[in-house]
Amino acid sequence: MDDGDEPFESVLDDAFPGRAVEAISESGPSWNDANRSVRVAFADGDAAFAKVATDGDGARIATELAAIDYVDRHCGVAVPTVLASASAGSTPYLVTAPMAGENFHRPWAEWSTDEREREIERVGAALAEIHAREFDRHGRIVAGGAGGLTVETDSWTETLVADIEQKRTLGSTDRYDHYYDAVIEAVRANARTLDRAPATLVHGDPAMPNVFRTDTEVGFIDWEIAHVGDPARELHRVEDRLRDWGDDAVGDRLVGAFREGYRERAGSLPGGREEREPVYDAVQLLGTAGFFDKHVEHVDAPPAQAAERFERDMERRLDAIQ
Image (cartoon, rainbow, N blue to C red; front, side, top):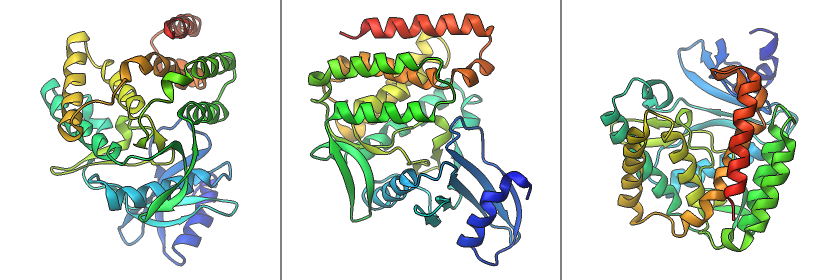
């Protein structure tokens, strides 16, 4: 282990006393500096993934534990097997076994459009399965497990504002902090529309790196921002990313397949989603605003041009909100 692995030494000693570790390696790129995740190779040949809350906040670990246990019992989608955890103390952590099957992120770029259609349809059905768990009110998941979830309830408007504020604290730059304020103002101005949204369990970040597949199952990792929210927002997040793959025709095919899978399980798409989507368009772009310093490292444009393009897009999205 090198010096950067010191937090994991205590975690692994606590979780697996006396068990020899052969190597620790990064599990993949992440912009969230409040967490660090690694792959652990044990000397006996087994492997695991360990996540540490580097900011010492165990709330996200508690949420993830509750959501994994609940989904494992109540939903027909795969979740990681928890090997060890601690949400209290100075170093909150979660250790899970590797998921069966393969991650969507790496092979997605190599798949044909036909294969992408088939697989994203399965993802749509899996999310509909999660969204089938309905609740009386929106809110944050703070505890619970297989027997039920403890939800700190609030209106969907204020739950969404709290999510935006949390993302603000996790951001790596405050360059566009004023956009957080502008989006929060727009969210609250649309409270009457937003608060009519259904209240269901949602994963929170169904991005490609968090989705796994086998021949028979689709599953998800990273449940730390799971909450009771608007399923339409979750669909919007997926569809927004799907439209980035190929031209408009390809994007439409992928979105169509995703919706077909969702409808097959749910019967229909979430009601009233079209009137709430302009708000979600602006909320979505805050993921770039808070990490713009990292975003510019991955775009094919000079920083000044990338900034101009981002600002133009954000202003357009804000203007589109009624």
